[in-house]
Image 1 (cartoon, rainbow, N blue to C red):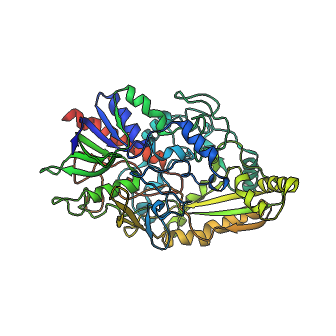
Image 2 (cartoon, rainbow, N blue to C red; image 1 turned 60 degrees about the vertical axis):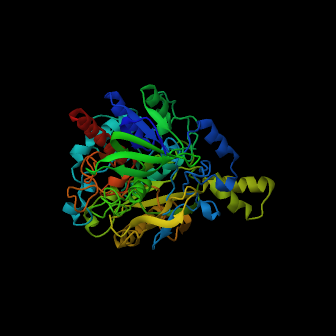
Image 3 (tube, helix red, strand yellow; image 1 turned 120 degrees about the horizontal axis):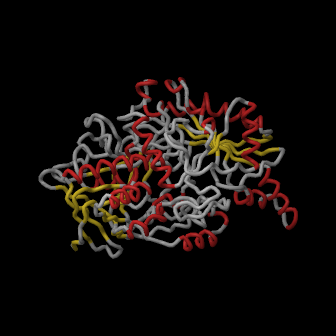
Amino acid sequence: MNSNSNADVIIVGTGVVGVLIAEQLLDAGISVLMLEAGPRVARSEIVENFRNLPLALKGDPSSCYPPRPWAPHPMPSSDNPEDQYLDLSGPDKYAQTFIRYAGGSTWHWAGTCWRLTPDDMRLHSRYGVGRDWAFGYDVLEPYYTRVEHKLGICGPSDPELQWPPLRSQPYPMEALPFSPGEQRFTEVVKELGYRNIPTAQARNSGVPYDDRPACCANNNCVPVCPVGAKYDAATALGRLEAKGATILTDAVVYRVDTNAQNQVEAVNYFDANKQSHRISGKIFVLACNGIETPKLLLMSSNTRNPKGLANSSDQVGRNMMDHPQLTMTLTLTEPYWSGVGPVVNSGIMETSQGDFRSEHAGAYFRFNNFARNRFVTFGALKKGLVGRALDEEIRRMSGCTADIVLAHEVLPDPENRLTLSSKKDWLGLPRPAIHYDVGDYTRKSAETYSLPIGNRIAEAMGAIDVKISPKFAQSKHIMGGTIMGSDPANSVVDPDCRAYDHDNLFLPGGGAMASTACGNSTISMAALGLKAADAIVRQMRKA
C-alpha cells in the first residue's frame, strides 16, 4: 500500500456538490485533495463520441461516456451483462443513469434547477405523510441564491413566472425564450387553467457567464453541451487547481478508515492498475451522491461500525428516492415543432402543490423540447418508405408528435434500500443492489390525478393518438441513502450533513434530502453542499 500526501479536507467525488465545497474551502485558505473514480476528459472527446454514435444510441445519455473497467457505471442500452452495474429488484426498477467521470453527472444533465417550496420541506407536519426537513425554507433560501450565482442560473425576472416566488435576489440572467412547441403548449394549458412557466436552468442565456459562452440552442444538452454554455462541474476543475486543489482521477475509494475515537482518519483507493493507496486528512467529505456514497459507507464496516460507517441508525442505504415519471407520446394533427433551445425549458409546477398531498403525490408536467427527428426516424423506416417520401414522413412526425412527461414525488420508505450485491466489479468490489417500489402514494397520484390531467392536456392539444408508458421510469434524480434528520436514531446526517456517528465526516448532496417534491434535485443538492461547506469552515477554524 502506498501513502500519498494528505490535506486538511479530503473530498471523494468531483461532481457539482464536491466542486462547490472544494472552492469554498480553498477560498477560506483550507487545503483540499479530491479523488475521482473515473477519468478526466476534454469536452471535444465527448462531443466526438456523440457524433460517432449510431442513431439508435443517441438517446442514451451514457453512451458517449464509456466506463473505465475500474469505474463502472450503468449503461442502459448495452446487452452486455457486465454493463448492468446496478443489481435491481422490486416492483419498480431503480434504473438510474449516472457517470463516473471527473465533473460527475452534470456532464449529461439537462441543467434544470427547480427550488423546493416551504410546503415541500414539511410534508409530515403539513400533510401527515413522509418526513419533515430538519430546517425550513428560510434556512435553505440563501444557499439557493448562492448556488444560482455560482453556477450561473437563468430564470424569469417576473415573480409571477418564478417557482417559488420567494427569493432574496434575482437570477443572474433572464430566462431563455420558448420554442415554437412550448409557446403553443403554454397557450393550450392556459385555457385549462394551468401556467407553463420558464424553467430556471444552469445555462447562459444570451450572455457569457463564468468564462462560459452563451447558449446557442444546439439542443444537445443531454448528453453533452458542445460549447459549454450549460454548467457542468468539469468546467470548474482547472479553476480549483489554480487555487491549490489536488485532484486525483482514476482513483476508486473502496474503504474509509476510522480511529479509536471513531473519527475518520483516512480513505483507501485503488488506481487503474489495482494498486492500493491511502490518503489521510482532518475532515472528510463523501460527495458521491445517493448510490456510491451509501455503497462506500457499507463497504467500510469495521469492528466499531459493524453495519457500516455512519449507520448506527440502520438508515444508510435506505429511503432511496427519485421522481417516478410517465411519458405520454402524442400524435397531433398540427405541428408543434420542439427542438429549438434547451431540451427542458418550461414546466407546470403548480400541480405539485395542494392539500391532496395528504392522500397522493403531486406531479409536474413538462413539454419535452428534445428535437423529435432521432425518436421518429425508426418509426418512419418501418413504414417501408424511401427517398423523398421517407424524408417527408420524418419531417411530418418530427413536427406532429410530442412527449409530455408527468414527474411525481415519492415518499421516503426505509424498505427502498441499497445493499451490497454478491456480484463484483472489475476491482472485486461489490456492485450496488437496490430494491425499489414507488409506493401507493405515487401510484394513486397517477391513477386519480396526473394521468387525468395529462389526458385533458392531450385532448386540448388535438392529439389523435396517445401512447402512455406502461410503467414508471426513473428520472435519474438520485435521492436518499444518507437521509437527514434531527434525531440520530432515525437519520444518518444532521442539518449540516455531518454524520451523526463521526464528527469529521460530511455526506452532503441528494442522499441527505428528506423529501423529493417534483422538480429536479440538483439545486437542492448543491445548496446542501454549500451549507455543509460553511459548517466545515467553522469546524476547521475551531480546530
